Amino acid sequence: MRILQSGVFARTVKKLHKNEKNALDKAVKKVVSDPNIGVLKKGDLSGVRVYKYKLSDKEFLLGYRFDEGEIVLTLLALGSHENFYRDLKRQ
Image 1 (cartoon, rainbow, N blue to C red):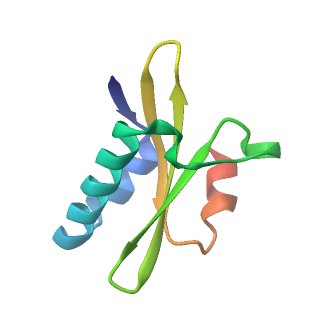
Image 2: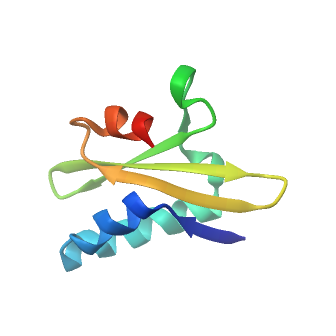
C-alpha cells in the first residue's frame, strides 16, 4: 500500500510536538491496517473518510481518502474539530 500526503497535511505535521506525532503515527497505523475504520462523509466531502483519535484530553481528526483499485491511501488533513471540515472542503 502506498501512502501519500497532501501539502496541507505535511505542513500541519511539521508543527506538531513529539508526543502529538507519536499519537498520529499510531492513528495512521490503525488506518493502514483497516482503511474502512474512518467515517465516510457525504455531500461536498464524498469519498473522504475521517478517523477520530484522542491525545490526552484533546480529540484530533484525520481526514483521508482510500483508493481500493490502486491501493493508495492519501492523507488529506489533520486537526481539531474547529474549522476542520471547512478547511477540508477548500482542498
